[in-house]
Length: 621
Image (cartoon, rainbow, N blue to C red; front, side):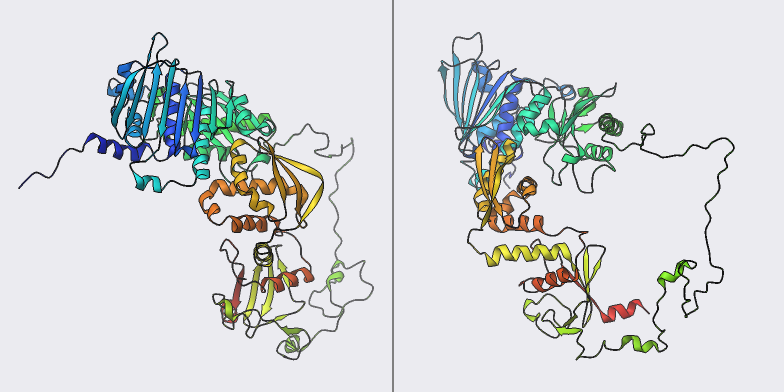
């Protein structure tokens, strides 16, 4: 029987390895820029076309490579940073495995130009699908210029699963941010389709954050710092009032390397305990400087998951550092006994005694006495709560009129099916009655009313959200909404990533009655808004739209109009805690059941709950 186990060809092995190292264009950008950093570059320029699918080019002014080094860097496990296994535990460079260049060359066309400072000529190499097509001397600038073209050209299955250009550009920008925050002293530039997205001069951490996130960050972040034998922690955290519901501005770095660490993330949230509303996330840019021997960065191909030797101790240190920083800027609630207006305590003079307050009682009051006493308001504090009507001796008279079909207090409404089920939308017009003037609001959140089969609870915010969504989707259809012009146009400042995301949805936003346009750079100007939109909340709604784009970008794009309207309806719906009148509750009820889907929000959450009579009767058994 012949042998069936054999070694894979290098080209196939490299393509398999590329599946772990190169997931998308952003992975290529990360590996190439990290190599430029390891080469000692002080200036790095990144050129991208079609979100990296056509071209990713990185130009640096680093040390460059000799002819042999340039050829060897494309071999698997060829590296200048590792000589023995123990070196894995003393790593301060960004790359070290020697897998990236071989993996990239296996699934793309790579052109490399490199020259050392003291060399007269550089080297030019062209590799396509792991095959060297050209290798020759060339006249070029000092440093390295590497271009990756037609990514996944020979792996069509991988290329097919790449997302849209806007989605892939978002990943590219996020990866660029991670490196830019980690090395603020390096001048960096990102250009997409000949449009400059980032142009970052070398600076300190604070200035780098301002240049990337925007000038608004200067008012929303505060410094934190702690130096111990265990580790050095420094960076900036966001003020509580600038927290958001969606993640996106949370960054951890260890020895300048970006990392993801859910355990440390909980430590930061613990420091914000009792000063942030439930579900809100603060922004932070936190840098750890630790001994490389105490961490393991070789546990994941992308090196973003890092294991620490003293995780528990670092957790406590991180929490204390963030809490101390918040306390220094009076962002943690404290009890200040030095404030004059905090307490009003009267001084006790010599000879004065403290007398307890006296309580007046009526010893002759009998709570079981049905007859009210006349002229007893001053003496009997309970008289205000007594009924001045004659007592009803027959308890059954209390329920007179409830079963009378001719009672003027009831009117038929076509609402719900007889069995209380809400799954069949066509059966909402049979046999239910709601008593007019019998709406009750529970805790400023639910509308309670009686129906023939029992009790119905309506979530007021979700119901209003469904009403607004249907109004924009079904009534207005594909027509553009009518806007109300602002007396003074408003400016909205976004960071670079947010501005790129918002430009993609701007045409659909304007169809709803807004008039927004790009004023230049990352600034947008709002000239008109829908008539029912609160003009003071425009920036808040734009932020909400961007948060949804960051979290669900692909799904959001697939049904752009529906998702923009869904976000607008959720934003404009009445908040929990708003006290409603009988007329307002009746209006919500009537408008809700005009909807073709009154029982579910656009997000698929329940709006109505029916408590049947059988269920209620069981509760009293």
